[in-house]
Length: 220
Image 1 (cartoon, helix red, strand yellow):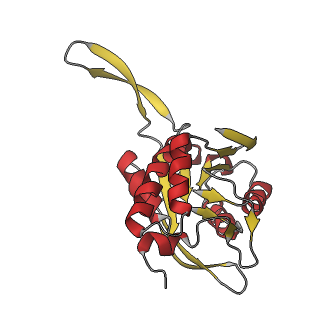
Image 2 (cartoon, rainbow, N blue to C red; image 1 turned 90 degrees about the vertical axis):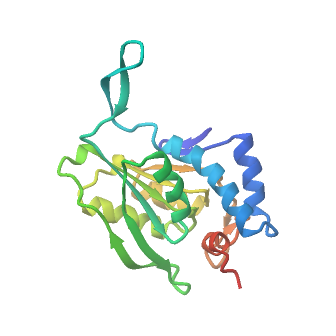
């Protein structure tokens, strides 16, 4: 694990590196791409949930009474995939966090301006005690940072505390990380790769192409 700056974490591990090589390869088919991405996602989710609120609970084993750490029922965990590519993260997140609320964020990138265009924002009511609300925003690519910033602003406008938000990506650009970290220095960014730069169309280099197209096999 590499930490560039406070609240920015890049996961380094041989299993992650191996699977990144699979998803970067332009000849990897849709099935192998999704399977490799899922394997990386487990590591990202574990890191993103390190600070979940826990409480002590007494339980009975077949042999005796013991005390365990369990998720605080008074807290609210929201996982927020940015459609459509973020849904591949969401599948793993729901498997590991079945008690979480799923907040779907629908936006696409205007190819002329590179700005996000909203079309959907479906959520469960956020609890009044914002100290106990945790949000994990899911998007495979942190490129320009525009969608990330808009998503974070959306939750903050609903009262979620900046320090209780995590942005989780598969691959990030220096430009995207800088933009998010400058605007929201208390938001934790977790990624498995920091790539070289963006090209003129806002795609990450070397990157992996369009994550949504490769996940859902919609490449022309």
